[in-house]
Image 1 (cartoon, rainbow, N blue to C red):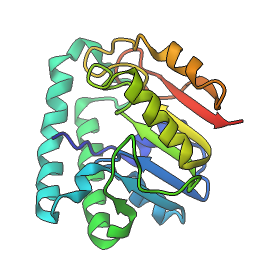
Image 2: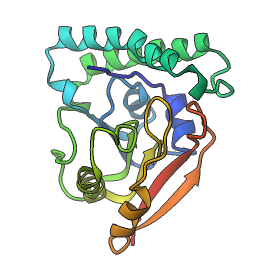
Image 3: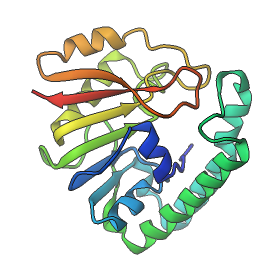
Length: 217
């Protein structure tokens, strides 16, 4: 089980965040430090992930073991990654370790912010959050989850959002291959939401510098 710990700074860049609304959901958040930092800024921030069902000691162990495991994926596909945003592998590792520490402190101090759950069925009411973020699940694992799963997952993210859903990245993990069914998937959603593919100021996988923005009509 890989539980990635991304930092608030990474979220700002991945999702091109300039300011946060009153409420934000980080869906399948893993060990990210985003929710802790957003909450410290006065935002009603909630994270959801299936790993939050783990007992506290197992969650700590899983987060810690995932730090080198994530680096191993990058090493296995070294030619598919660029370093201009991070500057160096060492800086990436520093950000991830700091984010893991922030997450583990906050999940212990404020466990109500960390809700067990997974797509395509989330334990929240309709339009609960102003903004919903989803990183490195949809499309990233499109070799494991098919188009119908993605359709159901996107509809669920839309359901719990009052305004906007942002999804990053739009390529498969590892080699960064494109997702062949993405255009057709967006066409199937066109009657429900407005879809925009927007460039962001972040790139780690080569060519993965776009997010999907879904806005209610």
